[in-house]
Every structure is written in structure tokens, then in C-alpha cells.
Length: 270
Image (cartoon, rainbow, N blue to C red; front, side, top):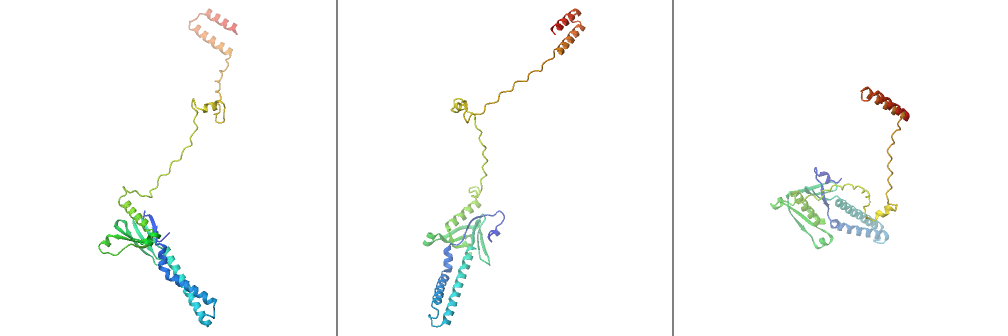
């Protein structure tokens, strides 16, 4: 993780990140670029015409050494400037504006969003063409004669940086009017697979079903017939009937003659 992001407080998030435009690297190293070109050309010329430049091989060797040393020094300085440029962190967080710089020795300055009153943006013609400018943040301390706390020279895309800064300031001061833009929506519920519906009467699919097409539903299995009642035993039925008749005889509901006549009739049916 970067050095500036390690300094963020709890629940503080980075909203926008930028650094100087690459023109700033050229502005800091253009002299050393010329030195490197001249030293390289001189070293190649002396090396190609050794002993013929100053008619002294020793002097030619010394010139070559000086040219190579200048070339290496220029390349080293240009590489250090590029390294320093890559370590620039100009951040807008949910609470403040931060500026962190330095390769070995780090320098960090920040300004709370509540203290920002205004910002001044200066862009030249080339700055508008290539997308860079100087952004000065004005705080209450500056208005009473204090020093400039947050100065962003030759910042890349300064218009977007300024808009993001004031948008976040509005979100912080008026959360009801400007809800956080990074608020994530709840995931959509999973859609259930639709079940096929039976065709309605009068639709074209009824004829397809009637013809037994590929989309026709399988015919329903016929309902199983109810179980047949168990066959009764005639002997058991006769015994039960005789018992009922004997009960009626014993209760005096029928006479003995009637009982005997009914008994004979039942025995004859067997």
C-alpha cells in the first residue's frame, strides 16, 4: 500500500488520486536531457576518431571519461526525478485533501474539506491543450494572511481534481442533498424459472396438443379402480342370520314356529 494511504483514518476512503503532469518532469530535467545528449554525442565522436581530435590520445581519453561521467550523471538525475514523480500522491479523501511527496524523506500536508473556502486555478494555453495547471486551495488561514498550505503546481487534469474536491466537500457538509456517489446498490434477486402454462381454450396450441405434438403434455394415467370388496362366506352369513333369529326368539319377538320355519327356509337355500 502507498505511503499516503497508510495515513488514512478509520472509515476514510480515497475518492480521487492524481499527481503532476509529465510536463513537470521535463521542466525539471530538460537541462540534464541536453547534457546527456551532448555527452553521448561527444563520447561517440571522440571514440570514433581516437587520436585525431586533439592529436593526443591521453586528452581524448580524458574527454571520453568526462563525457561518459556526464552522461551517467544526467541519466541518474533523470531517473531520480522520474522516481520522485512516481511517488507523488495527491489525494482527495472523504474528509480531506492530501499531498504526499518524497522518495526517501517523505513530506505530507493535508487540509480538511471543511476548512476549504475556495480554490484558484491557473492554466496557460499549453496547460489547456495538454491538460495541466496550477491549483491553489484557499483556506481560512490564507485569508487572514497565513501561508499557502496546499499548492498543486502543474497538476494533471486540474479541472477534474477541483470538481471532485468540491463535490466531496458538498457530500460531507450536506449528506441529505448529495448522497455518497460510491454507495453500492443491493444485488438484484435471482429470477425464478418460469413454469410452462397449460394452453387456454381457443388458442393455437390446443390443436397441437390434440394432435399429440412435441409440446403436448403426456396423457394422465387412468385412475385405479376401487378395490373390490372381499367375498363373503355363505356359511358365516347363515350362522349370523340364525343367531339374530335366535335372539329375536329368545326375546319373544317371534314364536318358536316362526323361528323353525325361517331356519328351514335358509337351510333349503344353501
